[in-house]
Each structure stands twice: as structure tokens, then as C-alpha cells.
Image (cartoon, rainbow, N blue to C red; front, side, top):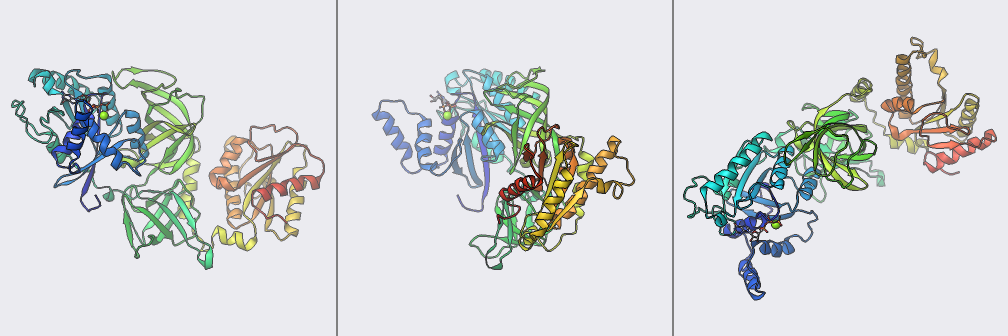
Length: 598
Ligand code: GTP
Ligand code: MG
């Protein structure tokens, strides 16, 4: 299969026992795609065991050979024609298919939907059709199967066709074909049917050949979710390789790259390939690593894009169409994870706009989403993610929902919504985008100063002498050669904050924005920055996190009771002496790897 021909992924769906496996078996047999003697071998096996021959057995026999090393739940079959290579994904149930589709393990560009002529349109025929529409698969051929069992009757075919077309129209699938087939007898699969001379249309194979391969992904805007960042440290090799698989578009040495959600911008210096001659470009579908001209700090989950192309959306509140597969319903009161590309963030269901029964298309208003429901809803995320809308790039608009380590749902983002911090976040993004990068990396500074830079908040109720502790800590660290600075919140009030009043609510958030910007500079310079604040709340902290990388912020609460809603990293409840408090903080800094043990 490793040639340069076009590939096409086609999924086959339909109600249980309507004949999916039989049709695939036929397609393989009639296109000479089976290994020599396979058909005879399986037929002989059936005869010896006095079982009627089934094409599904053929697939089982192939599966054993093909599936070694393939770890997806959908069975995949391959065959090729003069035009292209086909990968047929036999989705045993829609759950497996959905999981593979939204997680990117097996993405289909077209679908065959099988309906048994004797049973007609069933619940799953509709449900699966709905899923195809939701996943953005617009090329669908409906195969009305087992025509041999209904005497190849035109009237029955027309009846099923009429009922199902009506449904497809409602769910916005238009470019569909209807083909009367018998998978078992081979009518209209890869050849012409002599039993249905009334049918003048194309057979299954011809329809497949007529499908259009996905508008070539490499012509779309560049998108590469950052999977990992490899650091080289030996022999003065300071390379950092940003690695991932390119979802769409292409990238070349010299391209200007912008990472989202952060907005950080730089240029591709080299493209690194393992055990291969030097390459200067890479494109959709390829695992790729590149180095950057500036030592900027990028982590897993960011989306690499190109400067002059369509910008992705960035938000922590989204409107989405989701389908739910979990045994437990999706509830507002529970915390979940949302995974999109390589980003994984905490997620909550904020509201349900409507729930749709995928088989009847009935709309309901409900507060929670139960198994097999499809719903339009608003989701809030713990932090921003970068994504696209389905009409732009569908690959980066699909996501999965994880509950207890298990994929329990999936969906497509329909709209990017604003949240209360949107304006501030845009400012920070612009700041990052316009940032003049230094040639000295965070790691180099850490190495030189023998410390990791952090922003350490010391907070407490008013009667606790937090400033004295902070100053003692600063003195201790300074005397041991550390680059440390103590900043009291009050030091900003008559300087940087001279033009605002801390008593007003708007100005309070402006105050935190300014503090975050100051802290960001000092942390960027490599310092251990100690800031004291009275009764810091979670809200205050969130405002600061907009401007300072969350990973470098640490909070210490001193005093018996934490009397705000803050989730602190260290709580010193038992306050005895200054030196004891300092010791406890030092120990904390050591376990965090900020400073080494003496
Ligand atoms: P699941 O994978 O269990 O969902 O079923 P499936 O959709 O793959 O159906 P499968 O191909 O296993 O077919 C189910 C039964 O229908 C088998 O016994 C097939 O032999 C029979 N069958 C499938 N297609 C035809 C057909 O065109 N004509 C006749 N007579 N029987 C068929
Ligand atoms: Mg089957």
C-alpha cells in the first residue's frame, strides 16, 4: 500500500445484520483483492463444518492476518482500483466509529450506509446517518441490500428509498446515491445486476470511484498540534525540537510560525527528520519536528499555525454539537476533560440548548445528556484551547470528552464564545505575538542562576506578618547567591497604579493585569519573585494567570484558616517562628525543584 496513489477512507455503517460485512466481502472478492485461495479456503472450511458460507467469515479470516499491529477498534480492509487505494472501515457499532473518527484514529471521507430491504429503515439506520452528518461526512451512498430476498422488487426499493431520502434531507446530507444491491448474490456491487434491469444507475464500486477525495489537506492552512518538545542537552547541543503530526497544510524552513493559544511567534529554523537526509519542508499527514530561531517556551497542547494564513479560534467557552456515549449521563455538576488535538483541558457542561433524538430527530429540552443523545450545548473549559470551525478545517474542530480515563463522548465545535476575560486574554495574546524574543532561553538562565524562575505568592489574613516572612525568605535566598526579589503589592499602588483606584472593581482587575505584566517581566528575567498579598482569592489568581504562565505561579497561605476560596500550593497552618516559616517555604521550593537541596 505504500505508493503515491490517492487514498480514500470509507466507513460502512448500518443497523445490525443489515449486511455490512457481506458487502465488503463481496467488494474484496469481486475486485480480486483477496489473497490467492482465500475464498476457496473459507468456503471449504464452511463445508467441512456444515455451516452455510458467509462473506463475514472471509473478513474474520483476513482480520487475523491484517490486524496484527493495528490497534484501532474498527476493522479495516484494503483494496485498490486503477484509480486509488481504498481503506474500508467496518464500524461494528457507531460507538467505536465515533471514537476513532473524533480522535483521529480512523477518519472517513465518505460512507456507505446499508439498509436491509426486508427490514427497511431501522433506528440505527437513522442514528448512523445522523452521526455522519454531524461528523461532516457529506458523501454518502445508501445501499438497499438483500434485494434477492424481496424478489428484486422495484416497489420495495422505492419505498425504502423514499423514506430514507426524506430523513437525509432533514439532516442536511444531499449528495447521496441509492443503490439496490444484494451483497450475497453480488448484484450491483462491482458489476451490473441482471436481476434488476430496472435500475440504471451506477454500482457500488462506480459510486466509490466517483467520490471525491478530501480536498487535499495540504492546501489548507497549516495546523500542527504540538505533541512534545524534545530538548537536547549533551555536547553543547541546545536544540529544542517541536514535534507533532501535521493535521493540514505544509511547513517550510523560514516560515513564520505562530503558536496558539499563547500567540507566541517565531520562525522555523530547521526541519528535523530521523535517519533521513535533510529536509526543508513537510506536509499534512506527516510526523514532523522542527527547531525555531528563537528559544521561546512552548508546551504540549499548543497549535502551531502559519503567520500569513487563517488564524485559529481561541476560547475557553464554546458552543458545540456533542454525542454522548457514557453509561452515566453528562451532567452540569461533574468535571470532565476535553481533548482536541494534543490539548487536554478540564471541561464542564454549562448549559444544554437542545437535545435531539438521533433516530427520530425529535427535539427536547433537558438538563443532562444521556447515552446516545445528541445535543447542542455550551461547554466551559478550564483554560483556552485553539481550534477551527468545521467549515474551515474540520480536523481541528473535532474533540472527545473523557470521563474517568474513558472516552465517553465527542463532538464538533460550532461557535467560539467570549468569556469575562476575553478582552484581557486578547491583550496578552497580542503582547506575546509582538514580543521581541531574546536569544537566551529560560533554561540557559536557569542554568546560569542555578534556580528556576517562579512567582511565589505569600498570602494570609491581615494579622499575619507575611511581609516579614517574605523579607526573611528573600534575605535567606539572597545570602545563598540566589537571584531573588521581594515585591509588596503596595509598591505598585503609588507607582504603576498611580492613575487607578484600587477600591473600584474595574480598576482592581486592571491592577492585577499590571501586577501580572510586571511579574511576567521579572520571571522572564530568571528571578525568584516573592509577592505578598492580603487574602488573595481564586479570582485574583485567575486574573494573574492570564498574564503569567500558570506553571510558574506558586501560592503559600500562612495562618490556621484559609479564609478565601484559593487553592494554594502550600498551606502553613502552624505558625511558630519566622525561621520555621522560612524553612517550610524553602523545603517546598526544593521539592518543586526551584532551588537545589543544600
Ligand atoms: P453486524 O456486523 O453484526 O452488524 O452485521 P452486518 O451488517 O455485517 O451483516 P452481515 O454481513 O454479517 O450479514 C448478516 C446476515 O445477512 C448474514 O447471514 C448474511 O449472509 C446475510 N446477508 C447479508 N447480505 C445479504 C444479501 O444480500 N442477501 C441475503 N440473502 N442475505 C444477506
Ligand atoms: Mg459485520
